[in-house]
Image 1 (cartoon, rainbow, N blue to C red):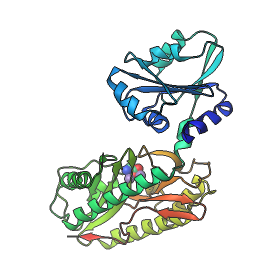
Image 2 (cartoon, rainbow, N blue to C red):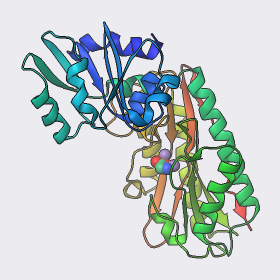
Image 3 (spheres, rainbow, N blue to C red):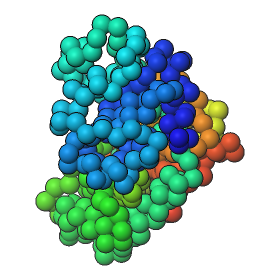
Image 4 (cartoon, rainbow, N blue to C red):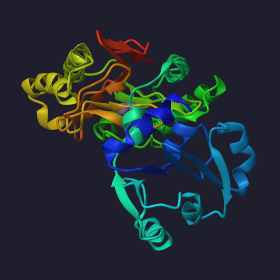
Length: 357
Ligand code: GLY
Ligand code: MN
Ligand code: MN
């Protein structure tokens, strides 16, 4: 049994269940290695069952370890869960954040009364938050691919290209270097559009003097990378430089505060207090950062509501921003590995303001 499966099983009692039904695709992948889109895993001290449909039987035989009993079911996999359960009273956990109301009713209908359904939150996500060596290696390669694509795009210049052209070039260069895909649709947002934290690239030309928020990442073997730089298309205004300096100061303070044992809330507060003191607290309306791994947004969070402590092996972003509606936005985002001694930055792109032609 893999370390991951064993850790999950070790956590079942604390979650108040005998068996756990894993249905969220990314969580199934994490525990079994299966990379397809339709599968369930049932896990307990004496149970390792993997269920998929006809389309994935061959793939599952290659990807899913022999310690699992592999079952083929009709495409609606929920219908097969009853057959895979031991014939005894038990508490069956399901992923409360991921099971639809329809599937829950269906389970209740199909399973005998002696099976109690118990909603469980975050049991796999908490394991995923601490990366092992293989996962880190993939994230680091994804970082290198993304960095190189960014340097190339910036080298080609920004002025006169549309936001969408730049976004497409970024995606293309990442894929050409070996990324599976972009880890999310890149954000390229010039001038006032940059004040939208999650702006969509437009068919609008970048003009001289614009600040351009570029937020991009590569995915490699399922693992994501996430980074933002705010770049000048030519020299930006003095106002813009001042805001840039404030965001950079907050970002560096946030990075310096990252350490195993600190709460996400404490790290967020270090960066946020600097932006508050600079008079822009109301222009920084999102959390300081988030975990990244198989998903681009995952546990743990760095935010005002994140009470949990960071652990060695977490991989998180540190990404303060200031967004001035109608004017411009600045965000600077690095991805870092949390260690007992502090943050190891995984991004190589420099942070002093880059001015592109
Ligand atoms: N790319 C989305 C984010 O930075 O959270
Ligand atoms: Mn991010
Ligand atoms: Mn980002």
